[in-house]
Amino acid sequence: MSLIVNNWLANTGVAARAMIQVRDWLFVVGSADHPYTSTATRLARVNVLTHAVDVVTFDNADGRHRNGSSLTYSPVTGKVYVQMGLNAFCIVEMDPATLAYRDVVNTDAYANGSRGSIEGAGAYVYAAPENSNRVLRYDPANWSTAPTELATISNQDCIRLDSGGSLFVTGHDPATIARIPFGFYVADHSAYNAPYNSLCDHFAFTVEDDKVWPAVDSNDQDANFFLLPTAKSRLATVNPVRLVPSVVGAQTQGVFEGGGYIWQLLGTSPGRLLRVNPDLAFVDMQLPVGQDAPRSIAFAGTKAYTLSGTSLVAEHDLPDLAPAAVPIPPDTGKPPKPSHPPKPPHPHGKF
Image 1 (cartoon, rainbow, N blue to C red):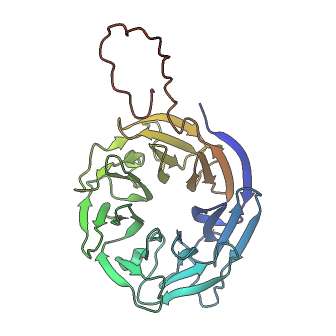
Image 2: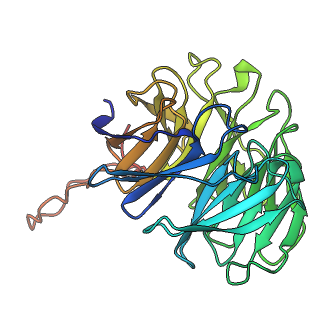
Image 3: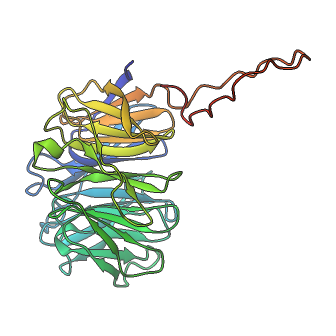
């Protein structure tokens, strides 16, 4: 079984770093060309229905609007926020419909790095500029107010807000995951042992078993294809999942939850999307994505969108996203035949 590649949506013209979906649009951030640090940050908006592409190159006259590393959408303000900067820190607010933008943060107090992350899912906008080792909380209703420094975490890679209001942040050297509970300014830390010295700048949550799923993104090739399911409540590693031993040296480019599964995108050539059963902790499906060295992935319903290293966006149908319905036998009016007690159904169907 494989992914159904519906079509190649667009060439974004962006040397891409990250991608998100907002309504019927995909937003891709990166630069006009490699390296990211020397040219202005560029953003492409792709309409998934019409395949139209609009590109914005940010004004970099001040030398600060480069090295775009992450972006997020705030349902509170209805705006997209792009994190960028080199030896400085900028957040640009953009209207997703008109693409009009303005600086809301432009400061020397913090320094953005080549990784780092930004999160806008809640009432605030949270930022983790990699070279500042700080987790920052901004009030999007009052950008002129200095941010609240929530915690000190080294070399941040990714920041996400869970449904309970807690922040989870991953970092590298050493590989670390931290939780900042809602209403607190101190983080609970959990460090992973070598060879897990670096984590991917993506991770996923599984709500039903209270775990967070970071992926290893290590220089040690033997560790590159590991997932590390970790209990949220105590940040203790639970049976690291070693994925597909044949994929040596494959870096993870995305980890997401969808349809009760964990999906991991590998930046191989061709790229692969792995479906992981979170209950049984194993890969039950490998799907080629039809692109070499994919760099990012976004989900929407039963669709997945992948971004290649050559800036192409492709749309895919995800197979078997939900378990098939179990038919109910008709009522014949006769007593059922004696039988052994049935085994409880697996929550995701048979494999």
